[in-house]
Image (cartoon, rainbow over the protein chains, first blue to last red):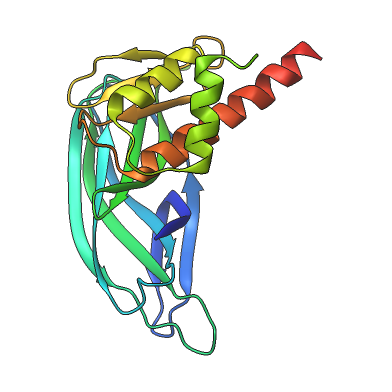
Length: 138
Length: 86
């Protein structure tokens, strides 16, 4: 499998006819305080199949690593690679809805996607501390 | 004359399979990357180009995707170095 797309967004879904909808792609998360909690986010991956993979079942894993290389999340699953038809290379869309992801401190976090334990790509997420807004003096 | 790291890069460009973690460390370090021991994975960073970073698992045997990505990352480094020289 080849990674064709890997991104974080506010929302994503796959329609009944296979269209991938993605809204609000982002690479930054800003927070006043830490640990920071991201109530909802979606990870979207599009993988392209290579010859010999058509029709097979593949296992995937997505790991979230902090700037110091600590793994803070690990999600895994499996998918069926469609059969290539009419000379078309099959693609697989994966949408993961993540709830309440906690980022312990500011820094560069990385989501890494693996298929059958082979590295397919990564996505950097910049988690920033921002100043608390000061109350307006009258 | 190409350096050891340049030779390794060409070998990895030609074949992505059957490399060990130690080979990848030699490649990265030969091109000036710094590898630090992280919590569950190791961190690879370039001191002059902080956007060039990745993580590596601590397996001795490496899946070919890590080698493919290393070749891409070093190609990006060479482009950036060319740009900063000009």
